[in-house]
Length: 282
Image (cartoon, rainbow, N blue to C red; front, side):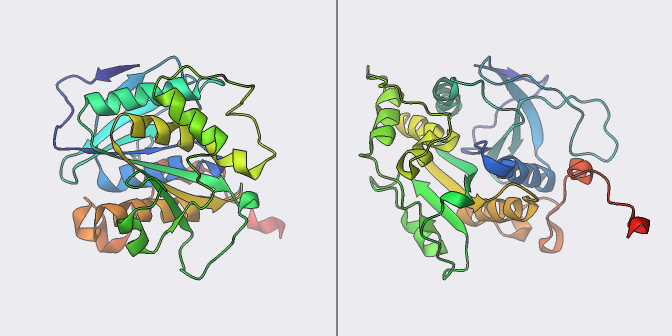
């Protein structure tokens, strides 16, 4: 994986927190990143070039009249005012390459001086076994500050730990061993096919590989997760974007152009679900 810096730009050493999506159901993590980029108005400083992500190209997603700046699969933005680096991923990882991709990203994050990585992702609502809305929040989390995945700050905010996380479960342990570079027997484990067993489902997702590889590099990792279904996932995106801000202690005045507590909707969302229906047919 190569980081390609744009002309006359560079990574800011004061941007020690990296926020990125992990692709999953409903693309909620990517939509949340769109909200953060659109609202913070960070500067694009470069992109990551890797054979592990499918190629794609498009027009600028964040301006009303695109000027021809290409949108690429892995774009890196920085907001020195907020001390964060934002990584937007626009296409999926090549099948079978998720762990290698996660290792490469962890190396990039460590080499660029990141100390905290926040991963935004979603979980299949159909897998949610212990539905509890008493806290009023649908955000779950997983952190490496403690062995059991708990984090005191996240608990104070009111989020619930991903209860299905078990570092001793075979797939989580396999991920940990692979991230550490241990020679282990694969034993026909697939991390990208649909898992029938709920115990195997969570460590099979991209966020789990990212979590394990960032953790192995000695970085603080916080995964913010929400359960959802396919469909209109914009409300879930707002939920995760707001959770990322809460975690970092951002308030409306901290974010550029975050006026009156309102998020700036990305212009690309105007065609997210196609044109509105012709009301004359009703």
